[in-house]
Length: 221
Image (tube, rainbow, N blue to C red; front, side, top):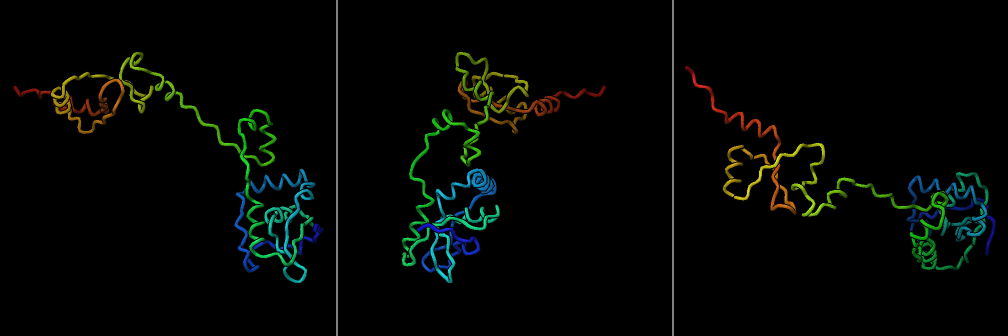
């Protein structure tokens, strides 16, 4: 049975009825504000989808379905609301079922249709959320497009145009070990690449220091 009930007689479900746990639903601030805006723009929706309430004490009612709508309507200045009043003999298990099913979405949304055939700005105004658009990584796209045939040298994704690249080629482990020892390349960083078995990176300051330290000192005359 639907009745128009004074808002002062409607209580949030705080677990005060044995067998009916506290309402678990909440909205983040921006979602809550979107719901308030929706009620302001389409108040007739309150008639089409009433609160579902249970009579429990001295003419008062617990809101089983619609606690957040009740909160929003109070803030918007409503003094009475249309409510579907449940039979006082309704079992707690049934109340739990109503509260749960009221918030379950059984269907799925085809996001392609929603994005391409509906007005996205309207949907966002009405509370529909869209996943944020992915940022484009231009360097990664260029790097992924390079093949062994088109690569001019072994690329290391971490080092973009911000660095100048010098290459010393080594096909021998003996030569590689000699270079490491000669330049003191303990701080060298190694990267696996698809063009060669491994690329080694060392800051030019470390190379400069190693070379300066190894320069022969002038002998005293």
